[in-house]
Length: 249
Image (cartoon, rainbow, N blue to C red; front, side, top):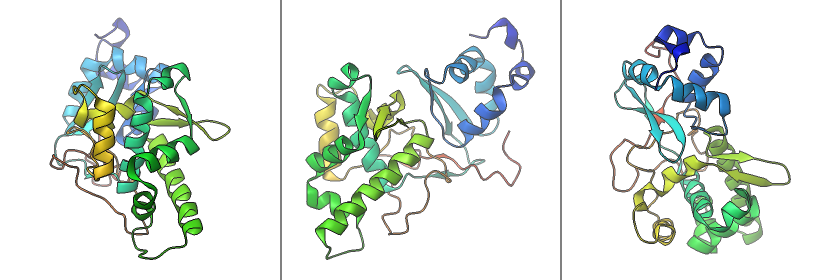
Protein backbone atom coordinates (compact mmCIF):
# COMPACT_ATOMS: atom_id res chain seq x y z
CA UNK A 1 0.00 0.00 0.00
CA UNK A 2 1.28 3.46 -0.92
CA UNK A 3 0.43 6.33 1.39
CA UNK A 4 -0.63 9.71 -0.02
CA UNK A 5 2.78 11.21 0.72
CA UNK A 6 4.36 8.78 -1.73
CA UNK A 7 2.21 9.40 -4.77
CA UNK A 8 5.18 8.74 -7.04
CA UNK A 9 8.73 7.37 -6.89
CA UNK A 10 10.24 10.85 -6.71
CA UNK A 11 8.46 11.41 -3.40
CA UNK A 12 10.14 8.30 -1.99
CA UNK A 13 13.59 9.33 -3.22
CA UNK A 14 13.17 12.78 -1.69
CA UNK A 15 12.35 11.32 1.73
CA UNK A 16 15.28 12.28 4.01
CA UNK A 17 15.53 8.68 5.30
CA UNK A 18 15.79 7.13 1.84
CA UNK A 19 19.48 7.64 0.95
CA UNK A 20 20.77 5.90 4.08
CA UNK A 21 18.16 3.16 3.79
CA UNK A 22 19.00 2.60 0.12
CA UNK A 23 22.71 2.22 0.88
CA UNK A 24 21.96 -0.17 3.75
CA UNK A 25 19.81 -2.39 1.53
CA UNK A 26 22.49 -2.48 -1.19
CA UNK A 27 25.02 -3.63 1.39
CA UNK A 28 22.83 -6.56 2.37
CA UNK A 29 21.12 -5.07 5.43
CA UNK A 30 17.89 -6.69 6.57
CA UNK A 31 15.33 -4.17 7.83
CA UNK A 32 12.81 -5.25 10.46
CA UNK A 33 10.19 -3.58 12.67
CA UNK A 34 12.81 -2.40 15.15
CA UNK A 35 14.15 -0.14 12.37
CA UNK A 36 11.00 1.89 12.87
CA UNK A 37 11.44 4.68 10.31
CA UNK A 38 13.03 2.47 7.64
CA UNK A 39 10.47 -0.30 8.02
CA UNK A 40 7.60 2.18 7.77
CA UNK A 41 9.14 3.78 4.68
CA UNK A 42 9.54 0.42 2.96
CA UNK A 43 6.01 -0.61 3.81
CA UNK A 44 4.47 2.65 2.65
CA UNK A 45 6.53 2.84 -0.57
CA UNK A 46 6.75 -0.86 -1.33
CA UNK A 47 4.98 -0.69 -4.70
CA UNK A 48 7.23 2.12 -5.95
CA UNK A 49 10.43 0.52 -4.63
CA UNK A 50 9.69 -2.95 -5.98
CA UNK A 51 9.55 -1.48 -9.49
CA UNK A 52 12.55 0.76 -8.78
CA UNK A 53 14.90 -2.04 -7.70
CA UNK A 54 13.60 -4.42 -10.37
CA UNK A 55 15.14 -2.14 -12.98
CA UNK A 56 18.55 -2.91 -11.50
CA UNK A 57 18.15 -6.66 -11.28
CA UNK A 58 17.01 -6.85 -7.66
CA UNK A 59 13.85 -7.91 -5.89
CA UNK A 60 12.70 -6.11 -2.76
CA UNK A 61 11.63 -9.05 -0.59
CA UNK A 62 9.17 -8.64 2.30
CA UNK A 63 8.88 -11.68 4.55
CA UNK A 64 5.82 -12.31 6.68
CA UNK A 65 8.18 -12.75 9.65
CA UNK A 66 8.56 -8.97 9.52
CA UNK A 67 11.63 -7.90 7.56
CA UNK A 68 12.73 -6.62 4.15
CA UNK A 69 15.90 -7.24 2.13
CA UNK A 70 17.19 -6.94 -1.42
CA UNK A 71 17.64 -10.10 -3.49
CA UNK A 72 19.74 -9.90 -6.69
CA UNK A 73 17.90 -11.61 -9.54
CA UNK A 74 20.09 -10.52 -12.45
CA UNK A 75 23.77 -9.89 -13.13
CA UNK A 76 23.89 -6.12 -12.70
CA UNK A 77 24.87 -6.40 -9.04
CA UNK A 78 27.40 -9.09 -8.19
CA UNK A 79 26.72 -11.57 -5.40
CA UNK A 80 28.83 -13.32 -2.79
CA UNK A 81 28.36 -16.32 -0.52
CA UNK A 82 28.67 -15.97 3.21
CA UNK A 83 31.82 -17.55 4.63
CA UNK A 84 31.36 -20.99 6.17
CA UNK A 85 32.00 -19.64 9.66
CA UNK A 86 29.35 -16.97 9.22
CA UNK A 87 26.87 -19.59 8.02
CA UNK A 88 27.58 -21.81 11.02
CA UNK A 89 27.14 -18.93 13.43
CA UNK A 90 24.00 -17.75 11.63
CA UNK A 91 22.35 -21.16 11.84
CA UNK A 92 23.33 -21.55 15.50
CA UNK A 93 21.75 -18.15 16.17
CA UNK A 94 18.64 -19.31 14.28
CA UNK A 95 18.45 -22.32 16.59
CA UNK A 96 18.59 -20.00 19.59
CA UNK A 97 15.94 -17.78 18.00
CA UNK A 98 13.62 -20.78 17.60
CA UNK A 99 14.05 -21.84 21.23
CA UNK A 100 10.93 -21.15 23.33
CA UNK A 101 12.97 -19.39 26.03
CA UNK A 102 14.03 -16.67 23.58
CA UNK A 103 10.62 -14.98 23.72
CA UNK A 104 10.69 -15.00 27.53
CA UNK A 105 14.14 -13.42 27.46
CA UNK A 106 13.19 -10.66 25.07
CA UNK A 107 15.32 -12.14 22.31
CA UNK A 108 18.53 -11.83 24.34
CA UNK A 109 21.31 -14.41 24.46
CA UNK A 110 25.00 -14.20 25.26
CA UNK A 111 27.99 -15.01 23.08
CA UNK A 112 28.83 -17.80 25.52
CA UNK A 113 25.42 -19.34 24.90
CA UNK A 114 26.02 -19.09 21.16
CA UNK A 115 29.36 -20.90 21.43
CA UNK A 116 27.76 -23.52 23.69
CA UNK A 117 25.03 -24.04 21.09
CA UNK A 118 27.63 -24.57 18.38
CA UNK A 119 29.56 -27.03 20.56
CA UNK A 120 26.39 -28.94 21.47
CA UNK A 121 25.27 -29.33 17.87
CA UNK A 122 28.64 -29.89 16.20
CA UNK A 123 30.73 -31.36 18.97
CA UNK A 124 33.78 -29.57 20.40
CA UNK A 125 36.31 -31.18 18.04
CA UNK A 126 34.29 -30.41 14.90
CA UNK A 127 33.75 -26.85 16.09
CA UNK A 128 37.48 -26.32 16.61
CA UNK A 129 38.29 -27.83 13.19
CA UNK A 130 35.68 -25.63 11.50
CA UNK A 131 37.33 -22.46 12.77
CA UNK A 132 40.93 -23.77 12.53
CA UNK A 133 40.75 -25.35 9.04
CA UNK A 134 44.49 -25.27 8.23
CA UNK A 135 45.73 -26.84 11.44
CA UNK A 136 46.00 -30.63 11.66
CA UNK A 137 47.43 -30.37 15.15
CA UNK A 138 46.53 -27.68 17.62
CA UNK A 139 46.84 -26.67 21.23
CA UNK A 140 43.31 -26.91 22.64
CA UNK A 141 43.58 -23.73 24.68
CA UNK A 142 44.82 -21.72 21.70
CA UNK A 143 42.25 -23.35 19.41
CA UNK A 144 39.38 -22.48 21.74
CA UNK A 145 40.61 -18.90 21.88
CA UNK A 146 40.64 -18.84 18.08
CA UNK A 147 37.07 -20.17 17.99
CA UNK A 148 35.89 -17.39 20.29
CA UNK A 149 37.65 -14.79 18.17
CA UNK A 150 36.25 -16.15 14.90
CA UNK A 151 32.73 -16.45 16.30
CA UNK A 152 32.97 -12.84 17.47
CA UNK A 153 34.02 -11.74 13.98
CA UNK A 154 31.11 -13.61 12.43
CA UNK A 155 28.67 -12.07 14.88
CA UNK A 156 29.91 -8.60 13.96
CA UNK A 157 29.44 -9.31 10.26
CA UNK A 158 25.97 -10.71 10.82
CA UNK A 159 25.11 -7.69 12.97
CA UNK A 160 26.05 -5.40 10.08
CA UNK A 161 23.50 -7.30 7.96
CA UNK A 162 20.68 -6.91 10.47
CA UNK A 163 20.57 -10.54 11.69
CA UNK A 164 21.53 -9.71 15.26
CA UNK A 165 22.16 -6.67 17.43
CA UNK A 166 25.20 -6.46 19.70
CA UNK A 167 24.31 -5.21 23.16
CA UNK A 168 26.25 -4.45 26.35
CA UNK A 169 27.65 -7.13 28.64
CA UNK A 170 28.34 -9.57 25.80
CA UNK A 171 24.64 -9.91 25.03
CA UNK A 172 23.11 -10.39 21.60
CA UNK A 173 19.57 -9.48 20.63
CA UNK A 174 18.35 -11.90 17.99
CA UNK A 175 16.40 -10.44 15.08
CA UNK A 176 13.70 -11.96 12.79
CA UNK A 177 15.96 -12.11 9.72
CA UNK A 178 17.76 -15.07 11.37
CA UNK A 179 14.82 -17.16 10.17
CA UNK A 180 16.42 -17.04 6.71
CA UNK A 181 18.93 -19.56 8.05
CA UNK A 182 16.05 -21.84 9.03
CA UNK A 183 14.31 -21.78 5.63
CA UNK A 184 15.61 -25.22 4.54
CA UNK A 185 13.61 -26.80 7.40
CA UNK A 186 10.60 -24.51 7.67
CA UNK A 187 7.33 -26.40 7.48
CA UNK A 188 8.73 -29.53 9.12
CA UNK A 189 7.16 -30.77 12.35
CA UNK A 190 10.39 -30.20 14.32
CA UNK A 191 12.28 -27.44 12.47
CA UNK A 192 14.78 -26.77 15.27
CA UNK A 193 15.82 -30.43 15.43
CA UNK A 194 16.07 -30.63 11.65
CA UNK A 195 18.19 -27.47 11.52
CA UNK A 196 20.47 -28.84 14.23
CA UNK A 197 21.00 -31.98 12.14
CA UNK A 198 21.90 -29.88 9.09
CA UNK A 199 24.49 -27.93 11.07
CA UNK A 200 25.94 -31.10 12.60
CA UNK A 201 26.20 -32.70 9.15
CA UNK A 202 27.83 -29.62 7.63
CA UNK A 203 24.91 -28.86 5.31
CA UNK A 204 25.11 -25.12 5.75
CA UNK A 205 22.72 -23.11 3.63
CA UNK A 206 20.63 -20.00 3.46
CA UNK A 207 17.23 -20.30 1.84
CA UNK A 208 17.06 -20.45 -1.96
CA UNK A 209 16.48 -16.70 -1.98
CA UNK A 210 19.49 -15.97 0.18
CA UNK A 211 21.86 -13.03 -0.04
CA UNK A 212 24.88 -11.19 1.47
CA UNK A 213 27.13 -8.45 0.06
CA UNK A 214 30.76 -8.81 -0.95
CA UNK A 215 31.98 -6.29 1.63
CA UNK A 216 30.15 -8.16 4.40
CA UNK A 217 31.19 -11.62 3.20
CA UNK A 218 34.87 -10.73 3.54
CA UNK A 219 37.51 -13.25 2.57
CA UNK A 220 38.77 -15.40 5.43
CA UNK A 221 42.53 -15.30 5.92
CA UNK A 222 42.63 -18.85 7.26
CA UNK A 223 40.99 -20.47 4.30
CA UNK A 224 37.56 -21.41 5.57
CA UNK A 225 36.36 -19.28 2.67
CA UNK A 226 32.97 -19.68 1.09
CA UNK A 227 30.77 -22.67 0.36
CA UNK A 228 27.99 -23.20 -2.15
CA UNK A 229 24.76 -23.65 -0.19
CA UNK A 230 23.33 -27.13 0.05
CA UNK A 231 20.50 -27.87 -2.31
CA UNK A 232 20.54 -24.58 -4.23
CA UNK A 233 22.30 -22.71 -7.01
CA UNK A 234 23.98 -19.34 -6.64
CA UNK A 235 20.83 -17.64 -5.34
CA UNK A 236 22.08 -17.44 -1.75
CA UNK A 237 24.04 -14.29 -2.21
CA UNK A 238 23.64 -10.62 -1.58
CA UNK A 239 24.40 -7.61 -3.76
CA UNK A 240 27.98 -6.47 -4.06
CA UNK A 241 28.21 -2.83 -2.98
CA UNK A 242 31.03 -2.21 -5.48
CA UNK A 243 29.06 -0.18 -7.99
CA UNK A 244 31.89 1.41 -9.89
CA UNK A 245 30.35 0.45 -13.22
CA UNK A 246 27.45 2.81 -12.59
CA UNK A 247 24.78 0.10 -12.70
CA UNK A 248 23.35 0.87 -9.26
CA UNK A 249 20.22 2.96 -8.93
